[in-house]
Image (cartoon, rainbow, N blue to C red; front, side):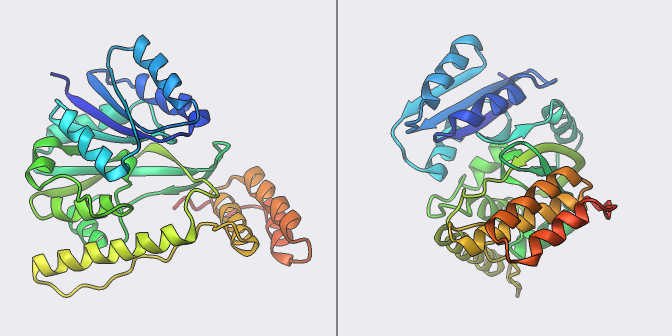
Length: 306
């Protein structure tokens, strides 16, 4: 029996898959099975996954028609044989010692049922934009979950398989906030924790989520929080953010471009900030905002990283 079961759902995204696959297969901790479910890909990702599976016996690949992310994650949990589950998404990059650090922490802290960590936001080109550093302690993480801010990033989460199955796995009535809903239930039977180390690069797609999908996500997050408040007998306050990703409209694309650029500037990534500034100018040459970002990129940055 392996120590870790990595569970990953794949639906298209062939161009980004090689970096994701290599980041998991080249982990310093090697005692794992890699459960991959191809959820109806139609862009050639299936052939790529089959090639990887033929070359590495740790990969257990399932190929079938599309059934959606939440159903697929539960299917992965049912297939898993290891006591620890590591989530992964098909467009992100795990740092080489991610599993090693997470396994060590989980072994040293048996009371922890769910473990997160710090992560970098990167763009489609792999350029760093910002570093997210969630709180490390159970009380703060529980509070943020109850407020709907989801402090534990789904594709870097590690949790105990038996505990997740005990609470019923992912709730399949949730299509986009299934992680927060599960984190809230896990927090009722054990402790949450985060590593201080950056262990994942989380890729932000400029058109990865429509405005309608974002509205659904916020609605499901509120629903999950309200259900948790009721179960715990508390009065809560929902602080889940409204969607900020571009929805294909010119104005939202400009706002997101500027957001990415200023994130990069705050992180000291001046050339990346400058690139987004010039893009903002191309999108809206008569707006001053892009010019402000370009000018700032030639000056010293704030040095803040999240």
